[in-house]
Structures are given as C-alpha cells and as structure tokens.
Image (cartoon, rainbow, N blue to C red; front, side):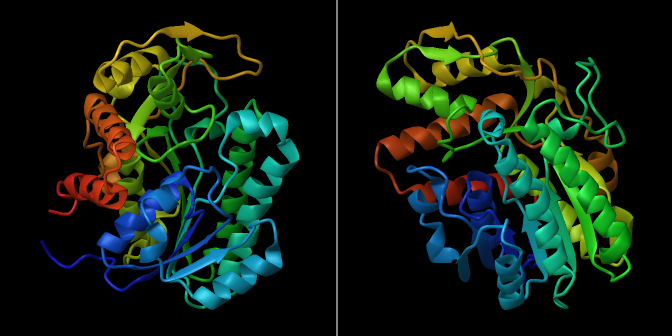
Length: 354
C-alpha cells in the first residue's frame, strides 16, 4: 500500500459532530489527514461523536451555526483548509415539516455561507457538498435517477437539498470555477451504520425497539429505498475529492450519485426484518399511520461514478446490516466504540486503498 493521498492534508468537515460526519472524521484521521470540524453540538444525547471519542482525533473543533455568515467566515479563515467536506445540514424529513424555515436557512443559506467564505480563503482547492438522493423530483419511476434528471422535492427537506444543488451550481459558475476552486455535489441513498440515534430513521428505531422489547412501528413498510452502509458513500466522497485535487479537477465539477447495487434497493419492511433476524430475537413489526408524505419508490443510477471515478459499492445489503447491528450490540455491551468503529473502517478500506 502506498502513501495515503490524504497524508497531512488540512481538511475541514462541516457537520463533523453528526452521524455521517463522525464516521468521515475517523476515516480521514486513519488516512493521515489533519481533520478540523465546524458544527453545532451533537444532535442527539446518544451520538457517535462522543461515544467514539472523535474529539480526541480532531485538530480543531469549532461549534459554529452555519446560518451565521460572519462566524462561518471567521472559522474557515482560522482553519485555512485545503479541502472542505460540507455535510452540515438539517437532515430529517419529519423535522423539515416541523421547522421548514430552519431547514431552508440551514441547508440553502448555510451552504451559501460556506461557499462564500471558501472563496475568500486562498487555501481552499476542493469542496464536496453533500446533498441527497431525495433532491430529485420523484416521479415514482421504476428506473433509477441519473444526475441530469430534474431536481425537485415534495417536502421541505428534499426541496431544500434541490435548492442547495442550484446554489452550488451558481457559485461554481460565477465564483469558484474562475478562481480555480473545484466543487462538486454528492448524492447518496439511505445510509445505515453504527452510531445513528436520530428519531424517525429506520435502524435507530429498530434498535430502540429491540432493546426495549416493544413492537417496531413502521410508517411505510412497502416503501423502496437505496440502502447502503455509511462507509459506501463516504468512500465515494473521498474518491471524488481526490479527483477534485487532481490535474483534471475541473472535469469532475459536477453532481455525482453514490448509490448501492440494485440488490440493495429493497423495502423498509425487508430491512427491518433482516435487522431483527441479525439482532437474534423475535420482534413484532406493525404499521403506523404516517402524518406526512414520503416517497414510495426511489433508486439511484451510479453508473457515472463507476465509469469515471472507478467507484463501486463494496458491501452487500446483508454485510451492511450485519456490520450495523454488530456495532449497536457492541455499544450495548460496553465495548470500546472507537476501536469498533475504526476496525470496521479498516475492514472496509482494505478493499478501497489496496
């Protein structure tokens, strides 16, 4: 194995205290990067950031609200990153119905604040802005969505992420591209993995039901989603950032899908049942009446990433769910969570950087 392309790079992760951000920070640290973070406090009382002691591995830990443009500008000027992974967001559909203005302010204007600050700091070379598979105008088509399909979004969260895509496009054309700063967006499917305790997400809801011995209530058991372990899209973000740092950087300044294989696009109910089987106890699964709209069918076409970035999913759905449930059981049993998380990253990365 050669030297990591991330060795000693100064990298800023916005949203580093969140679920996906914490996993990314741990992976970047393993790769030798100088990891800096900009975020609010962890979003839930139980959280991966604290459980895995991610703060021990962070060079700079800033608690900043990305809705504050002056604070964002000062933070990025202080860090002087070479690469920015922008993950900070209001990430929940149900929360977006409760707080639509907060959702738009965070996801749309927050992104604009990060990009505006980045263009005034001479250190920045590459930016990966993470949005979502839900940014597409969902027609309930049977074929997967491609990067050039129409953007939209029924609910405020999904719609705000479509708006985010447009903000990035405008900043890329008007400011960042002419300055030589490479920026791209990344759209992933429904991620699972240890350390997510958000309310209203399938696996955390499953684990809470399993541990409490109560029936698992599902809003849309027949809804089809592109499921993937959190390390799958993170490997795509890293691969994309490396392309943005290359001599051909501007060729990759586009939107990119990082979704699972078709075999991992299954219903909510099927994932819940498989998780229950791996947990190892009988679990009753019931349907509850939803109080807001959610898409019924959503799939991603990642052929562009396969062809041009040479990225592809590594773990089957069974592997993804098994690794996730094993993580939660290790946490329940009081094992060292940082070691557990790093071991799963090493296992996954062994087939990425070999």
